[in-house]
Amino acid sequence: MAIVKPFKAIRPAAELVEKVACLPYDVMNTEEAREMAKGNPHSFLHVVRSEIDLAADQDPYADLVYQTARKNLDAFVEKGYMNEEAAPLFYIYRQLMNGRVQTGIVGCTSIDDYLNDIIKKHEFTRPVKEVDRIQNFSFCEAHTEPVFLTYRNRKSLNTIMNDWIKFHMPVYNFTTDDGITHIFWPIDDLNLVSEIEKEFADIDFLYIADGHHRSASSVKVGLKKREENPGYDGSEEFNYFMAVIFPDDDLFIMDYNRVLTDLNGHSEADFLTKVAEKFEVNDAPVGSPYKPMAKHTFGMLLDGKWYVLKAKDGIYDEKDPVDRLDVSILQKNLLEPLLGIQDPRTDKRIDFVGGIRGLEELERRCATDMKIAFSMYPTTMDDLLDIADAGEVMPPKSTWFEPKLRSGLFVHSFK
Image (cartoon, rainbow, N blue to C red; front, side, top):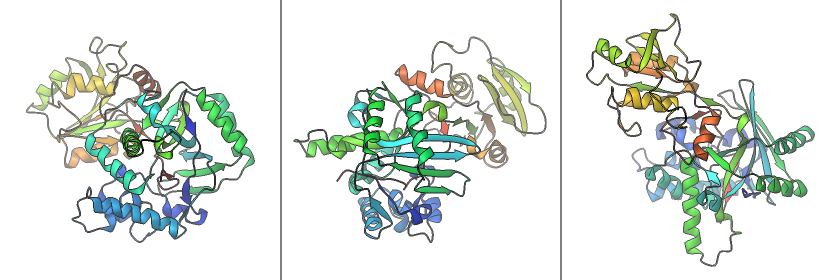
C-alpha cells in the first residue's frame, strides 16, 4: 500500500501566481535562469536557482547559494508573496497542452515507501545532482519542488478529482508563455481528504515518472533529520516529500533524440555499410525531417540527408523490457560499437534533444556543431512501468515528459 498524505502547502497569493511560477530548476543553466527572472522579484527562481542573486562567478554549490535560497523563501512568506495553508490539504493540479489534459493529486509521499520500493524507480541518479537538491532542501527546511509520480489508473480517484473540479472554482488558472495552462484546486473537505488517503492506500505501487534526483535527495534529507532527531515517531514532516501524482494514461512521453559530433573516424560510405549490418537502411521521404512512427524504427540525419533505419530481427531480446527499448537498441548496436559512445551520460561527443524542440532542432545542430543525428520513437508508459516493475533501470535519456510541472505553485515545509 502507498502512503500519500495531505500537507500545509506554502503557495502563492492568487494575484501573484503567474509571477511566482517558474520552470523547474533543472531545465536551464544559471545564465538562462538569470534572464528568466530579470526584473521579476517574485520569480521562484530566486529560491530554486538562488545563485542568480549573487555574483556571476559565484560557485553555484557554495553554502552562500543555499543560504540565499532560504533567505529568499523566508522573504516570500514575510512579504505575502506566498502563504502557508491553515490545515493539511490535498490539491488537484491540471495541465493543458495542445489539447491534451493531465490531472493529478498533489500530496506528500513517504520516504519509507521509497526505501521499500513501493515507490519504484527506473533511472540511476548522479551524486553531484543529488547533493545540490539536498543542500537546497536542507537549508530551506522545505521541499521547494515536487517529484512527478504516476500510478496505474484507478477510476475511483479520477471520479473524486472530476467531481471536485465540476463543482468548485480553481484558485489558479493561468497560461504560461509556452502555451501550457495550469489550473489548481485545494481540496478543503476533510472527509474527502481522508477518502483520498484511503484510495492511495489501496494502490500497490507508485512510480517515479520524472524527478529521480529530487526523490533521492528528499529521502536523504529525511534520513539525516531522523539521525538528528532520534526520538522521531514517523509523523514528522521530514518523513515525507512532496509529489504530484498522475494516472499513467494521462501522461505523455515525447521522443528524446540524439546528436553526435563525429563518425568516430569512419567515412560516410563505410559508416552506412556498417549500419546496414544491423539495420535496414532506406532513404527517407524527401521534404521534411523523418519522425519514426513505430517502435524499432529510427530517423538518421547525415550530411543533410534523412535515412530510415529499422532494427533487424535478432539484434534485441523482445522479452527483455530494457533490451527491447529503442534507446537500448540504438546504443548497443550503433552508438557504442560504431561511434564509440561507451557512456552516454558522460561522453561529450553526444548530446540529447527533447522532442519539445522539434526535429528541426536536429537539422540546426547538424548544420552548426554536430555531424549526425538520430530521431527516436518515444518510450511508452508501458515500457516505463514494466521496467520499474522488473526492478531494472532504463538507459540514460530514455524519457522526456511534457508538460513539465511548474515550480513555485506549492512548497512543503518540514521545519
